[in-house]
Image (cartoon, rainbow, N blue to C red; front, side):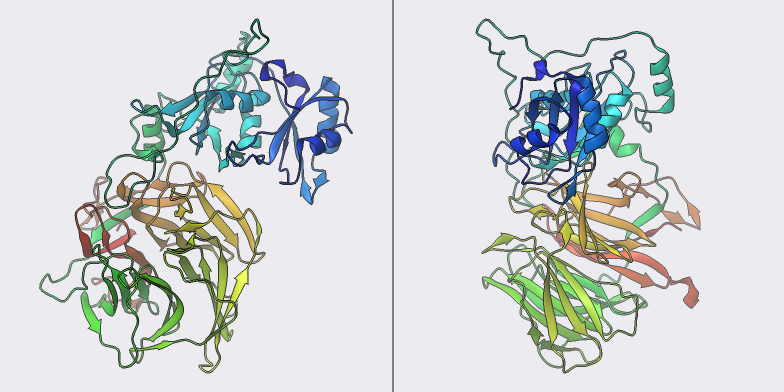
Length: 610
Protein backbone atom coordinates (compact mmCIF):
# COMPACT_ATOMS: atom_id res chain seq x y z
CA UNK A 1 0.00 0.00 0.00
CA UNK A 2 3.03 2.25 0.31
CA UNK A 3 3.85 4.50 -2.59
CA UNK A 4 7.30 5.74 -3.56
CA UNK A 5 8.36 8.84 -1.66
CA UNK A 6 8.76 10.90 -4.82
CA UNK A 7 5.07 10.38 -5.62
CA UNK A 8 3.79 11.62 -2.27
CA UNK A 9 1.74 14.81 -2.31
CA UNK A 10 2.78 16.28 0.99
CA UNK A 11 -0.04 18.81 1.01
CA UNK A 12 -2.47 15.90 0.97
CA UNK A 13 -0.59 13.79 3.53
CA UNK A 14 -1.33 13.43 7.25
CA UNK A 15 0.72 11.93 10.06
CA UNK A 16 -1.18 9.41 12.22
CA UNK A 17 0.35 8.61 15.61
CA UNK A 18 -0.30 6.69 18.83
CA UNK A 19 -1.46 3.63 16.93
CA UNK A 20 -2.06 0.38 18.75
CA UNK A 21 0.04 -2.65 17.78
CA UNK A 22 -3.09 -4.28 16.34
CA UNK A 23 -3.63 -1.53 13.77
CA UNK A 24 -2.75 -2.69 10.25
CA UNK A 25 -2.33 -0.71 7.04
CA UNK A 26 -5.66 -2.09 5.86
CA UNK A 27 -7.44 -0.94 9.00
CA UNK A 28 -5.81 2.49 8.86
CA UNK A 29 -6.87 2.77 5.22
CA UNK A 30 -10.48 1.96 6.15
CA UNK A 31 -10.45 4.51 8.97
CA UNK A 32 -9.08 7.29 6.78
CA UNK A 33 -11.65 6.58 4.08
CA UNK A 34 -14.14 8.27 6.41
CA UNK A 35 -12.47 11.58 5.47
CA UNK A 36 -12.05 11.00 1.75
CA UNK A 37 -10.42 8.96 -0.98
CA UNK A 38 -7.06 7.48 0.07
CA UNK A 39 -4.24 6.71 -2.38
CA UNK A 40 -1.38 5.66 -0.07
CA UNK A 41 -0.81 4.36 3.47
CA UNK A 42 2.71 3.91 4.81
CA UNK A 43 3.54 2.49 8.27
CA UNK A 44 7.30 2.24 8.94
CA UNK A 45 8.24 -1.22 10.18
CA UNK A 46 11.10 -2.76 12.10
CA UNK A 47 13.45 -4.52 9.70
CA UNK A 48 13.91 -7.52 11.99
CA UNK A 49 10.54 -8.15 13.62
CA UNK A 50 8.35 -6.70 10.87
CA UNK A 51 6.16 -4.93 13.44
CA UNK A 52 5.14 -1.33 12.79
CA UNK A 53 6.38 1.54 14.92
CA UNK A 54 2.93 2.81 16.11
CA UNK A 55 2.67 5.64 13.60
CA UNK A 56 2.14 6.07 9.88
CA UNK A 57 1.47 8.44 6.97
CA UNK A 58 -1.72 8.60 4.91
CA UNK A 59 -1.91 10.37 1.56
CA UNK A 60 -5.31 11.47 0.26
CA UNK A 61 -6.21 12.19 -3.34
CA UNK A 62 -7.13 15.77 -2.43
CA UNK A 63 -5.72 18.30 0.02
CA UNK A 64 -9.23 19.05 1.30
CA UNK A 65 -9.58 15.43 2.43
CA UNK A 66 -6.38 15.66 4.48
CA UNK A 67 -7.61 18.83 6.17
CA UNK A 68 -10.96 17.19 6.86
CA UNK A 69 -9.23 14.13 8.36
CA UNK A 70 -7.44 16.35 10.88
CA UNK A 71 -10.75 17.94 11.88
CA UNK A 72 -12.84 14.79 12.25
CA UNK A 73 -10.42 11.95 13.01
CA UNK A 74 -7.88 13.51 15.40
CA UNK A 75 -8.20 11.89 18.85
CA UNK A 76 -10.62 9.21 17.62
CA UNK A 77 -10.37 6.09 19.81
CA UNK A 78 -8.90 3.03 18.08
CA UNK A 79 -8.40 -0.06 20.24
CA UNK A 80 -8.82 2.16 23.26
CA UNK A 81 -6.12 4.66 22.21
CA UNK A 82 -6.76 8.22 20.99
CA UNK A 83 -5.26 8.51 17.50
CA UNK A 84 -3.27 11.66 16.71
CA UNK A 85 -3.83 13.05 13.21
CA UNK A 86 -1.66 15.98 12.08
CA UNK A 87 -1.35 17.76 8.74
CA UNK A 88 2.06 17.58 7.04
CA UNK A 89 3.41 20.86 5.69
CA UNK A 90 5.25 21.49 2.43
CA UNK A 91 5.88 25.22 2.77
CA UNK A 92 9.33 26.01 1.43
CA UNK A 93 11.48 28.85 2.65
CA UNK A 94 15.18 29.65 2.25
CA UNK A 95 17.92 27.18 2.97
CA UNK A 96 19.37 29.01 5.96
CA UNK A 97 16.28 29.57 8.08
CA UNK A 98 17.78 27.46 10.87
CA UNK A 99 15.10 24.77 11.04
CA UNK A 100 17.75 22.19 11.82
CA UNK A 101 16.94 19.19 14.01
CA UNK A 102 19.08 16.86 16.07
CA UNK A 103 18.05 13.18 15.90
CA UNK A 104 19.32 11.02 18.74
CA UNK A 105 19.20 7.39 19.84
CA UNK A 106 19.15 6.17 16.25
CA UNK A 107 19.26 2.45 15.61
CA UNK A 108 22.39 1.32 13.73
CA UNK A 109 20.13 0.28 10.84
CA UNK A 110 18.82 3.83 10.32
CA UNK A 111 20.43 5.37 7.23
CA UNK A 112 19.98 8.61 5.30
CA UNK A 113 17.31 7.15 3.04
CA UNK A 114 15.14 6.09 5.97
CA UNK A 115 15.51 9.51 7.59
CA UNK A 116 14.43 11.16 4.35
CA UNK A 117 11.46 8.81 3.89
CA UNK A 118 10.29 9.44 7.43
CA UNK A 119 10.85 13.17 7.92
CA UNK A 120 9.98 14.41 4.43
CA UNK A 121 6.33 13.83 5.34
CA UNK A 122 6.49 16.94 7.54
CA UNK A 123 7.90 19.35 4.95
CA UNK A 124 10.66 20.10 2.49
CA UNK A 125 14.12 18.81 3.40
CA UNK A 126 16.77 21.26 2.18
CA UNK A 127 19.93 19.20 2.73
CA UNK A 128 20.81 15.53 2.67
CA UNK A 129 19.81 14.04 6.04
CA UNK A 130 23.03 13.24 7.87
CA UNK A 131 23.81 10.20 10.02
CA UNK A 132 27.04 10.79 11.96
CA UNK A 133 29.42 7.89 11.41
CA UNK A 134 32.73 6.59 12.67
CA UNK A 135 35.38 7.82 10.22
CA UNK A 136 37.11 4.43 10.10
CA UNK A 137 34.34 1.83 10.21
CA UNK A 138 31.53 4.07 8.90
CA UNK A 139 29.31 2.61 11.62
CA UNK A 140 26.55 4.90 12.81
CA UNK A 141 27.34 6.81 16.00
CA UNK A 142 23.67 6.79 16.95
CA UNK A 143 22.69 10.33 16.03
CA UNK A 144 22.16 12.56 13.03
CA UNK A 145 20.66 15.76 11.67
CA UNK A 146 17.92 16.85 9.29
CA UNK A 147 17.23 20.39 8.03
CA UNK A 148 13.79 21.64 6.98
CA UNK A 149 12.90 24.60 4.81
CA UNK A 150 10.49 25.96 7.45
CA UNK A 151 10.10 26.09 11.18
CA UNK A 152 6.52 24.91 10.78
CA UNK A 153 7.80 21.63 9.36
CA UNK A 154 10.47 21.31 12.06
CA UNK A 155 7.93 22.00 14.83
CA UNK A 156 5.59 19.38 13.40
CA UNK A 157 8.40 16.82 13.16
CA UNK A 158 9.31 17.37 16.81
CA UNK A 159 5.69 17.16 17.93
CA UNK A 160 5.01 13.96 16.00
CA UNK A 161 8.32 12.10 16.14
CA UNK A 162 10.00 12.91 19.47
CA UNK A 163 9.77 9.74 21.57
CA UNK A 164 8.38 7.67 18.70
CA UNK A 165 9.95 4.37 17.65
CA UNK A 166 12.12 4.19 14.55
CA UNK A 167 13.62 0.73 13.90
CA UNK A 168 12.57 -0.37 17.38
CA UNK A 169 14.20 2.54 19.24
CA UNK A 170 12.62 5.65 20.72
CA UNK A 171 14.23 8.55 18.91
CA UNK A 172 15.05 11.97 20.32
CA UNK A 173 14.00 14.83 18.03
CA UNK A 174 14.85 18.39 19.04
CA UNK A 175 16.34 21.56 17.60
CA UNK A 176 20.09 21.24 17.10
CA UNK A 177 22.58 23.53 18.80
CA UNK A 178 24.05 26.32 16.66
CA UNK A 179 27.58 25.59 15.54
CA UNK A 180 28.75 29.10 16.40
CA UNK A 181 27.18 29.09 19.85
CA UNK A 182 27.72 26.83 22.83
CA UNK A 183 24.49 27.60 24.61
CA UNK A 184 21.80 28.29 22.04
CA UNK A 185 19.65 26.00 19.95
CA UNK A 186 18.11 26.71 16.60
CA UNK A 187 14.43 27.63 16.60
CA UNK A 188 14.70 30.93 18.45
CA UNK A 189 12.17 33.71 17.96
CA UNK A 190 14.83 35.79 16.19
CA UNK A 191 15.46 33.06 13.63
CA UNK A 192 11.75 32.59 13.07
CA UNK A 193 11.26 36.33 12.50
CA UNK A 194 14.10 36.47 9.97
CA UNK A 195 12.68 33.45 8.15
CA UNK A 196 9.28 35.16 7.83
CA UNK A 197 10.86 38.31 6.37
CA UNK A 198 13.05 36.53 3.83
CA UNK A 199 11.16 36.20 0.53
CA UNK A 200 13.62 33.74 -1.06
CA UNK A 201 12.37 30.25 -1.72
CA UNK A 202 14.26 27.02 -2.21
CA UNK A 203 13.26 23.72 -3.69
CA UNK A 204 13.64 20.87 -1.19
CA UNK A 205 16.57 18.50 -1.48
CA UNK A 206 15.85 15.66 -3.89
CA UNK A 207 18.71 13.20 -3.39
CA UNK A 208 16.32 10.42 -2.51
CA UNK A 209 13.33 11.67 -4.56
CA UNK A 210 14.56 9.62 -7.50
CA UNK A 211 13.28 9.91 -11.03
CA UNK A 212 12.52 6.40 -12.27
CA UNK A 213 15.08 5.03 -14.72
CA UNK A 214 14.50 3.38 -18.02
CA UNK A 215 13.27 0.23 -16.35
CA UNK A 216 10.90 2.14 -14.10
CA UNK A 217 12.90 1.39 -10.97
CA UNK A 218 14.73 3.97 -8.86
CA UNK A 219 18.51 3.78 -8.44
CA UNK A 220 19.65 1.82 -5.39
CA UNK A 221 19.81 3.74 -2.09
CA UNK A 222 23.11 4.33 -0.26
CA UNK A 223 24.45 1.27 1.60
CA UNK A 224 22.83 0.73 4.99
CA UNK A 225 24.64 1.63 8.20
CA UNK A 226 26.98 -0.96 9.63
CA UNK A 227 25.73 -3.10 12.46
CA UNK A 228 26.55 -1.94 15.97
CA UNK A 229 29.62 -3.47 17.51
CA UNK A 230 29.17 -6.00 20.29
CA UNK A 231 29.21 -4.51 23.77
CA UNK A 232 32.70 -5.20 25.18
CA UNK A 233 33.20 -7.04 28.43
CA UNK A 234 33.11 -4.49 31.24
CA UNK A 235 36.46 -3.63 32.72
CA UNK A 236 38.49 -4.89 29.76
CA UNK A 237 37.77 -2.47 26.92
CA UNK A 238 38.75 1.18 26.97
CA UNK A 239 37.69 2.24 23.46
CA UNK A 240 34.82 4.57 22.67
CA UNK A 241 31.44 3.02 21.89
CA UNK A 242 28.53 4.02 19.74
CA UNK A 243 26.61 5.45 22.65
CA UNK A 244 29.33 7.83 23.85
CA UNK A 245 27.74 11.06 22.61
CA UNK A 246 29.36 13.06 25.36
CA UNK A 247 32.81 11.89 24.27
CA UNK A 248 32.65 12.44 20.50
CA UNK A 249 34.99 14.77 18.66
CA UNK A 250 32.30 16.36 16.53
CA UNK A 251 31.78 20.04 17.33
CA UNK A 252 28.04 19.63 17.72
CA UNK A 253 28.54 16.82 20.21
CA UNK A 254 31.01 18.94 22.17
CA UNK A 255 28.47 21.75 22.27
CA UNK A 256 25.83 19.41 23.66
CA UNK A 257 28.10 18.26 26.47
CA UNK A 258 29.13 21.71 27.63
CA UNK A 259 26.43 24.24 26.92
CA UNK A 260 24.00 23.40 29.70
CA UNK A 261 23.40 25.88 32.45
CA UNK A 262 24.13 24.33 35.83
CA UNK A 263 22.11 25.60 38.76
CA UNK A 264 24.08 23.89 41.54
CA UNK A 265 27.80 23.44 42.10
CA UNK A 266 28.90 20.12 43.60
CA UNK A 267 31.98 18.85 45.40
CA UNK A 268 33.11 15.28 44.70
CA UNK A 269 35.74 14.32 47.26
CA UNK A 270 37.29 11.26 48.83
CA UNK A 271 36.44 10.83 52.50
CA UNK A 272 39.62 11.29 54.54
CA UNK A 273 40.37 8.39 56.89
CA UNK A 274 43.29 6.98 58.81
CA UNK A 275 45.18 4.87 56.28
CA UNK A 276 46.27 2.45 58.99
CA UNK A 277 42.71 1.88 60.22
CA UNK A 278 40.50 -1.09 59.29
CA UNK A 279 38.93 -1.03 55.83
CA UNK A 280 36.59 -3.44 54.07
CA UNK A 281 38.24 -5.54 51.38
CA UNK A 282 38.25 -4.06 47.88
CA UNK A 283 35.08 -5.02 46.04
CA UNK A 284 32.21 -4.14 43.72
CA UNK A 285 28.57 -5.22 43.62
CA UNK A 286 28.02 -4.48 47.32
CA UNK A 287 25.26 -2.41 48.96
CA UNK A 288 25.53 0.69 51.12
CA UNK A 289 22.61 1.62 53.41
CA UNK A 290 22.20 4.34 56.04
CA UNK A 291 19.94 3.37 58.94
CA UNK A 292 18.07 6.35 60.33
CA UNK A 293 18.76 10.00 59.61
CA UNK A 294 22.37 10.67 60.50
CA UNK A 295 22.87 7.06 61.56
CA UNK A 296 25.50 4.46 60.77
CA UNK A 297 26.09 3.36 57.18
CA UNK A 298 26.21 -0.40 56.53
CA UNK A 299 28.22 -2.09 53.77
CA UNK A 300 26.98 -5.60 52.95
CA UNK A 301 28.38 -8.26 50.63
CA UNK A 302 29.99 -7.73 47.23
CA UNK A 303 32.65 -9.49 45.17
CA UNK A 304 36.12 -8.88 43.75
CA UNK A 305 37.31 -9.34 40.20
CA UNK A 306 38.61 -12.81 40.96
CA UNK A 307 34.99 -13.89 41.56
CA UNK A 308 35.25 -14.27 45.34
CA UNK A 309 32.00 -13.11 47.00
CA UNK A 310 31.58 -11.68 50.49
CA UNK A 311 28.83 -12.12 53.10
CA UNK A 312 30.32 -9.75 55.67
CA UNK A 313 28.94 -6.57 57.22
CA UNK A 314 30.87 -3.37 57.94
CA UNK A 315 29.51 -0.13 59.37
CA UNK A 316 30.88 3.38 58.91
CA UNK A 317 30.51 6.14 61.51
CA UNK A 318 30.65 9.70 60.16
CA UNK A 319 31.53 11.11 63.59
CA UNK A 320 34.70 9.05 63.93
CA UNK A 321 35.29 8.63 60.19
CA UNK A 322 36.07 4.98 60.84
CA UNK A 323 34.95 1.54 59.64
CA UNK A 324 34.04 -1.31 61.97
CA UNK A 325 33.64 -4.99 61.10
CA UNK A 326 30.31 -6.21 62.51
CA UNK A 327 30.37 -9.73 63.93
CA UNK A 328 26.80 -11.11 63.83
CA UNK A 329 25.42 -12.22 67.17
CA UNK A 330 23.41 -14.89 65.34
CA UNK A 331 22.78 -16.08 61.82
CA UNK A 332 24.78 -15.25 58.70
CA UNK A 333 24.41 -14.14 55.09
CA UNK A 334 25.52 -16.40 52.24
CA UNK A 335 28.25 -14.66 50.21
CA UNK A 336 26.79 -12.70 47.28
CA UNK A 337 27.00 -9.62 45.09
CA UNK A 338 24.47 -7.74 42.98
CA UNK A 339 21.85 -7.97 45.73
CA UNK A 340 19.72 -5.09 47.00
CA UNK A 341 19.45 -3.75 50.54
CA UNK A 342 16.92 -1.27 51.93
CA UNK A 343 16.33 -0.03 55.47
CA UNK A 344 12.92 -0.16 57.16
CA UNK A 345 13.31 1.17 60.66
CA UNK A 346 16.34 -0.42 62.30
CA UNK A 347 16.32 -3.45 59.97
CA UNK A 348 18.01 -3.92 56.60
CA UNK A 349 16.19 -6.17 54.09
CA UNK A 350 18.54 -7.90 51.64
CA UNK A 351 17.04 -9.50 48.52
CA UNK A 352 18.62 -11.73 45.88
CA UNK A 353 22.20 -11.70 44.67
CA UNK A 354 24.69 -13.96 42.95
CA UNK A 355 27.66 -16.02 44.17
CA UNK A 356 29.70 -16.58 41.03
CA UNK A 357 32.19 -18.99 42.61
CA UNK A 358 29.41 -21.22 43.96
CA UNK A 359 27.25 -20.85 40.87
CA UNK A 360 24.32 -19.82 43.07
CA UNK A 361 21.67 -17.21 42.27
CA UNK A 362 19.30 -16.18 45.08
CA UNK A 363 15.74 -14.95 45.54
CA UNK A 364 15.68 -15.14 49.33
CA UNK A 365 15.01 -12.24 51.70
CA UNK A 366 17.44 -11.92 54.61
CA UNK A 367 16.98 -9.43 57.44
CA UNK A 368 19.80 -7.81 59.38
CA UNK A 369 18.70 -6.23 62.68
CA UNK A 370 21.16 -3.42 63.42
CA UNK A 371 20.06 -3.29 67.08
CA UNK A 372 21.14 -6.86 67.77
CA UNK A 373 23.58 -7.38 64.86
CA UNK A 374 21.70 -10.56 63.96
CA UNK A 375 20.74 -12.20 60.67
CA UNK A 376 17.61 -14.20 59.89
CA UNK A 377 15.98 -15.45 56.70
CA UNK A 378 12.49 -13.99 56.45
CA UNK A 379 9.34 -16.03 55.95
CA UNK A 380 7.77 -14.81 52.72
CA UNK A 381 4.40 -15.54 51.12
CA UNK A 382 3.06 -14.90 47.62
CA UNK A 383 4.59 -15.36 44.16
CA UNK A 384 8.30 -14.76 44.67
CA UNK A 385 10.52 -13.31 41.92
CA UNK A 386 12.88 -15.66 40.15
CA UNK A 387 16.46 -15.69 41.49
CA UNK A 388 18.27 -12.59 40.29
CA UNK A 389 21.01 -10.06 40.81
CA UNK A 390 21.76 -6.55 39.46
CA UNK A 391 18.14 -5.48 40.05
CA UNK A 392 16.97 -2.13 41.46
CA UNK A 393 15.05 -1.78 44.73
CA UNK A 394 13.67 1.11 46.74
CA UNK A 395 11.35 1.65 49.72
CA UNK A 396 8.24 3.53 48.64
CA UNK A 397 7.17 6.68 50.49
CA UNK A 398 3.97 6.41 52.50
CA UNK A 399 1.54 9.23 53.18
CA UNK A 400 0.67 7.75 56.57
CA UNK A 401 3.67 6.96 58.78
CA UNK A 402 1.46 4.99 61.14
CA UNK A 403 0.86 2.23 58.60
CA UNK A 404 1.68 -1.24 59.82
CA UNK A 405 3.30 -2.21 56.51
CA UNK A 406 5.98 -0.64 54.32
CA UNK A 407 6.53 -1.54 50.68
CA UNK A 408 9.75 -2.33 48.84
CA UNK A 409 9.66 -2.05 45.04
CA UNK A 410 11.91 -4.37 43.00
CA UNK A 411 12.42 -3.98 39.26
CA UNK A 412 14.37 -5.91 36.65
CA UNK A 413 17.67 -7.62 37.30
CA UNK A 414 19.11 -10.70 35.66
CA UNK A 415 20.28 -14.25 36.23
CA UNK A 416 22.66 -16.56 34.38
CA UNK A 417 19.71 -18.81 33.49
CA UNK A 418 17.09 -16.30 32.31
CA UNK A 419 19.02 -13.13 31.43
CA UNK A 420 17.65 -9.62 32.01
CA UNK A 421 14.08 -9.20 33.30
CA UNK A 422 11.36 -6.56 33.03
CA UNK A 423 9.37 -7.86 36.01
CA UNK A 424 8.09 -5.58 38.77
CA UNK A 425 7.36 -6.75 42.31
CA UNK A 426 6.25 -5.30 45.63
CA UNK A 427 7.43 -6.77 48.90
CA UNK A 428 5.05 -5.93 51.75
CA UNK A 429 7.06 -5.62 54.97
CA UNK A 430 5.27 -5.65 58.38
CA UNK A 431 6.74 -2.90 60.55
CA UNK A 432 5.83 -4.00 64.08
CA UNK A 433 4.40 -7.53 63.96
CA UNK A 434 7.44 -9.81 63.85
CA UNK A 435 5.25 -12.91 63.54
CA UNK A 436 3.60 -11.81 60.29
CA UNK A 437 5.23 -13.10 57.10
CA UNK A 438 6.43 -10.77 54.38
CA UNK A 439 4.39 -10.94 51.17
CA UNK A 440 5.37 -10.66 47.50
CA UNK A 441 3.00 -9.11 44.96
CA UNK A 442 3.69 -9.11 41.21
CA UNK A 443 2.62 -5.89 39.45
CA UNK A 444 1.55 -5.20 35.86
CA UNK A 445 1.34 -1.40 35.46
CA UNK A 446 -0.22 0.32 32.45
CA UNK A 447 1.59 2.59 30.02
CA UNK A 448 4.83 2.14 28.06
CA UNK A 449 6.43 -0.88 29.69
CA UNK A 450 10.25 -0.50 29.71
CA UNK A 451 12.44 -3.17 28.17
CA UNK A 452 14.14 -5.73 30.38
CA UNK A 453 17.20 -4.34 32.12
CA UNK A 454 19.84 -4.88 34.76
CA UNK A 455 22.53 -2.78 36.46
CA UNK A 456 20.20 0.23 36.83
CA UNK A 457 19.28 2.47 39.77
CA UNK A 458 15.94 3.18 41.46
CA UNK A 459 15.41 6.80 42.54
CA UNK A 460 12.64 8.71 44.27
CA UNK A 461 11.78 11.41 41.74
CA UNK A 462 8.79 12.71 43.71
CA UNK A 463 6.37 11.51 46.35
CA UNK A 464 4.37 9.81 43.62
CA UNK A 465 7.02 8.79 41.08
CA UNK A 466 9.97 6.39 41.01
CA UNK A 467 12.45 6.58 38.16
CA UNK A 468 14.80 3.84 37.01
CA UNK A 469 17.97 5.35 35.54
CA UNK A 470 20.55 3.66 33.36
CA UNK A 471 20.87 -0.06 32.83
CA UNK A 472 21.73 -2.70 30.27
CA UNK A 473 19.11 -4.61 28.27
CA UNK A 474 18.61 -8.27 27.42
CA UNK A 475 20.92 -7.99 24.40
CA UNK A 476 23.75 -6.47 26.44
CA UNK A 477 23.27 -2.95 25.07
CA UNK A 478 23.12 0.15 27.23
CA UNK A 479 19.54 1.36 27.75
CA UNK A 480 18.75 4.68 26.08
CA UNK A 481 15.76 5.72 28.14
CA UNK A 482 14.72 6.41 31.71
CA UNK A 483 11.62 4.62 32.98
CA UNK A 484 9.33 6.54 35.34
CA UNK A 485 6.66 4.76 37.37
CA UNK A 486 3.70 6.65 38.85
CA UNK A 487 3.06 4.76 42.09
CA UNK A 488 -0.38 6.36 42.54
CA UNK A 489 -1.86 5.25 39.23
CA UNK A 490 0.70 2.49 38.59
CA UNK A 491 1.51 3.75 35.11
CA UNK A 492 4.82 3.60 33.23
CA UNK A 493 6.25 6.45 31.18
CA UNK A 494 9.48 6.31 29.16
CA UNK A 495 11.78 9.30 28.75
CA UNK A 496 14.30 8.94 25.89
CA UNK A 497 17.81 9.77 27.08
CA UNK A 498 20.30 10.59 24.35
CA UNK A 499 23.26 12.52 25.76
CA UNK A 500 23.80 10.20 28.76
CA UNK A 501 23.61 6.41 28.67
CA UNK A 502 25.25 4.00 31.07
CA UNK A 503 24.85 1.07 33.42
CA UNK A 504 26.43 -0.10 36.68
CA UNK A 505 26.29 3.44 38.03
CA UNK A 506 25.73 5.01 41.43
CA UNK A 507 22.83 7.44 41.82
CA UNK A 508 20.76 9.10 44.52
CA UNK A 509 18.99 12.23 45.65
CA UNK A 510 20.78 15.30 47.01
CA UNK A 511 18.58 18.13 48.24
CA UNK A 512 15.79 17.21 45.83
CA UNK A 513 18.05 16.77 42.81
CA UNK A 514 18.88 13.40 41.20
CA UNK A 515 22.64 12.93 40.95
CA UNK A 516 24.74 10.11 39.46
CA UNK A 517 28.41 9.19 39.39
CA UNK A 518 30.44 6.92 37.14
CA UNK A 519 29.31 3.74 35.42
CA UNK A 520 29.89 2.03 32.09
CA UNK A 521 28.65 3.75 28.90
CA UNK A 522 29.16 0.84 26.51
CA UNK A 523 32.67 1.85 25.55
CA UNK A 524 34.45 3.25 28.58
CA UNK A 525 34.41 3.44 32.36
CA UNK A 526 33.12 6.84 33.44
CA UNK A 527 34.16 9.12 36.28
CA UNK A 528 31.81 12.05 35.77
CA UNK A 529 29.15 13.43 38.08
CA UNK A 530 25.81 14.26 36.45
CA UNK A 531 22.42 15.57 37.50
CA UNK A 532 19.01 15.01 35.94
CA UNK A 533 17.51 18.11 34.33
CA UNK A 534 13.72 18.19 33.96
CA UNK A 535 14.07 20.99 31.42
CA UNK A 536 16.49 19.04 29.22
CA UNK A 537 14.89 15.66 30.01
CA UNK A 538 18.39 14.27 30.25
CA UNK A 539 21.36 13.84 32.59
CA UNK A 540 23.95 16.60 32.25
CA UNK A 541 27.36 17.04 33.82
CA UNK A 542 27.49 19.15 36.97
CA UNK A 543 29.99 21.90 37.66
CA UNK A 544 32.53 20.79 40.22
CA UNK A 545 34.16 23.10 42.73
CA UNK A 546 36.43 22.94 45.72
CA UNK A 547 35.68 24.53 49.08
CA UNK A 548 38.55 26.49 50.58
CA UNK A 549 38.16 28.91 53.49
CA UNK A 550 34.49 29.24 52.73
CA UNK A 551 35.02 30.57 49.21
CA UNK A 552 34.16 28.83 45.99
CA UNK A 553 37.11 28.43 43.63
CA UNK A 554 37.03 28.06 39.88
CA UNK A 555 35.27 24.90 38.61
CA UNK A 556 37.61 21.93 39.00
CA UNK A 557 37.96 18.41 37.68
CA UNK A 558 37.38 15.67 40.25
CA UNK A 559 40.43 13.64 41.22
CA UNK A 560 38.25 10.69 42.23
CA UNK A 561 39.03 7.68 39.98
CA UNK A 562 36.49 6.49 37.40
CA UNK A 563 34.61 3.32 38.26
CA UNK A 564 31.68 0.98 37.75
CA UNK A 565 30.06 -1.60 40.03
CA UNK A 566 30.26 0.77 42.99
CA UNK A 567 27.46 1.12 45.55
CA UNK A 568 25.91 4.23 47.03
CA UNK A 569 23.30 5.61 49.41
CA UNK A 570 21.86 9.03 50.11
CA UNK A 571 23.09 10.10 53.55
CA UNK A 572 22.17 12.81 56.01
CA UNK A 573 25.21 13.94 57.94
CA UNK A 574 26.26 16.61 60.37
CA UNK A 575 29.40 18.47 59.25
CA UNK A 576 32.30 18.11 61.68
CA UNK A 577 32.70 21.87 62.02
CA UNK A 578 28.97 22.43 62.61
CA UNK A 579 27.84 20.55 65.75
CA UNK A 580 24.41 22.16 65.67
CA UNK A 581 21.80 19.48 64.89
CA UNK A 582 20.00 21.86 62.54
CA UNK A 583 23.07 22.01 60.29
CA UNK A 584 22.62 18.54 58.80
CA UNK A 585 23.29 18.19 55.08
CA UNK A 586 22.44 15.64 52.44
CA UNK A 587 24.94 13.90 50.22
CA UNK A 588 25.58 10.80 48.12
CA UNK A 589 28.06 8.40 49.72
CA UNK A 590 29.85 5.94 47.40
CA UNK A 591 31.99 2.92 48.21
CA UNK A 592 34.47 0.99 46.09
CA UNK A 593 33.70 -0.49 42.71
CA UNK A 594 36.15 -1.40 39.97
CA UNK A 595 38.03 0.18 37.10
CA UNK A 596 40.47 -1.06 34.48
CA UNK A 597 43.38 -0.94 36.93
CA UNK A 598 42.06 -2.41 40.17
CA UNK A 599 39.24 -3.03 42.60
CA UNK A 600 38.54 -0.10 44.93
CA UNK A 601 37.89 0.35 48.65
CA UNK A 602 37.62 4.14 48.97
CA UNK A 603 34.69 6.26 50.17
CA UNK A 604 33.54 9.18 48.04
CA UNK A 605 31.11 11.88 49.18
CA UNK A 606 29.19 14.10 46.76
CA UNK A 607 27.56 17.22 48.25
CA UNK A 608 26.55 20.67 47.16
CA UNK A 609 29.55 22.94 47.35
CA UNK A 610 29.96 25.21 50.38
